[in-house]
Image (cartoon, rainbow, N blue to C red; front, top):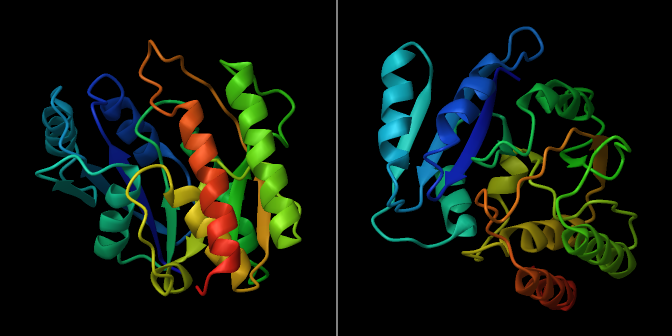
Length: 236
């Protein structure tokens, strides 16, 4: 492996995107592995594009691809766009806020580099030092994870985690259709439905509030459960 593709879907994240990019660029990877950073701006209206371009200008030697969508389509669509533009052997999803720490990339890569796994999730639950901004999000995530475990016969502690890392050839072979937050349950269901095991690794988590820009809602949890059930029982 020589290249990690980092897909960053961004919608109205002007306040954090530059700092996220700086952290991603500084994150250390195992020797010989480079980074391809793919920012997919989901038609932001707050200057997110300006901040990305400013950061790119400040780091001209860094491989950053900046894709600007002309219509807001949702996180899932932005991720799927990033997948299509990626060229690395491994792909990870990185949110454009500051909730997740890119310094965890190296730990997430290890199970894939060992050859034992093709899919690795960063679990917030496995790190007992983590806090949560809302108990409803915590218990909602636990419920989604429990239902995932029961449906597919593999224990998953943190299905809704942002940090999902994949062997690129596997991810690109999976037909994905979700536009919004449905990307997470859809890809999880289809990976497990094909018989692949998901390795979970403890990660750090720094939750933000709705006032700070957190966008996911309780209704997205209900939709996640619906999609998990749907993809359990339809052909993948």
